[in-house]
Length: 533
Ligand code: KIV
Ligand code: ZN
Image (cartoon, rainbow, N blue to C red):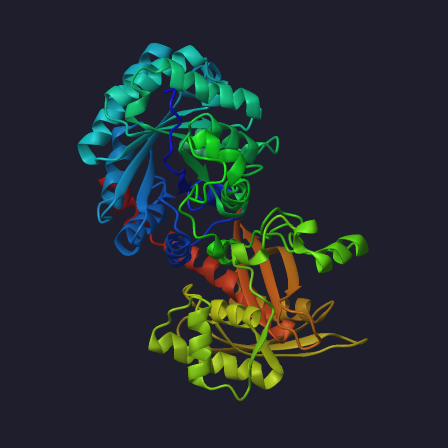
């Protein structure tokens, strides 16, 4: 294909599939749904919602997303096996626009050690399983896994076979993050030049970040004609993660003049190269970080806390004279809110509602009432409420994870003596639970008291507090992760009192753990569902 392809780049978000494979990033179904709805607001073209065959929980999450999320294509992942593909088709069946993504390794190292199949066998399976997927769904993506380390000639043959059997998207994964940008670009150019029917499919890329090159590789592939990029919010994913959505999108936006000619456009063309609503980037990043408990590094490009902060005097001086001296993009273009002081304790429900609407929240009357009560509570303690505070408290209040244990009261006495905490909870059967404990500090004492009441062994592996805004009365956000049986569970909460936020965050994570244990204690149900596969 010698004429540059002028179509925009499709953004395929795999936060809920590859991203969720990141150790410790496990989300429950309501959380996945919340992320998927935000991804739809962000304007991604395709949501890879999960791997339905992997577990009953995955199946249900994909099914709910297919039923409830409007806009993007809803995609499920399936190995190149009939059982996987059938289960995937069932899970996505309610989505008006749906896709089956099936994959099969093509590198010799995977064929020999993992699949134990010959190249000839892989070629046949690829064709047959794509054809089977097409019987169940119009839109089929095929990925030759470990393409980055596959023999290009064999890769061309497999791709050609997949397209001949109905694949509508061909995705080229650099599964182990091994390639460098020029090499990966050449691989894409080679596919475009050597696969006779390539024009019948969208060419996609899926890069891992083991050498820190995932974004660079994806952008190089776009220059060579790839028109779908697979990525995750905050770049989360297996090992070093996946291509970061916000970095690819903002590179294509900020450096549009550079990329335009590769789309056959004039350098100065203003037409966006993706359909992403960039003002939703920051909120999506925060949501994914809060729900997964995977904190964003302060220096992370685009969404890190320091990404728009200028410390050096020379830089600050330049910025005051002209923003362009040291800033290549505007913080507001990613939806980073101004820390404006907007509301106070005398603000009424209408002012609160209209500010929420300006911030992009459309709440039901019930949710608005809950959020408003919370707002009044915070406004009593904090003189002025900024947009950041509103966002933190609304997200905190409306989080929908199942709550077996509810924190009723927490009180600590601390200082240079014996830090002691008294905690009152409402348990799963509505029973009131009360206990106290002594710890090395107030948070430790609270966690010990909670553990005495909840009585599920767990190990706290991460605890972090961040301030939402500056000032002595600022709200603190607590993110924690705990481990039980090799599984990680996260919790997040924001409050003007960091002890209360710490208790809520811990209870949030324990509730997820409790839910998992409850589900695992229903083996009959799980076995029955497994049999249906
Ligand atoms: O990294 C990979 O190869 C994958 C495939 C399933 C596309 O995630
Ligand atoms: Zn991957």
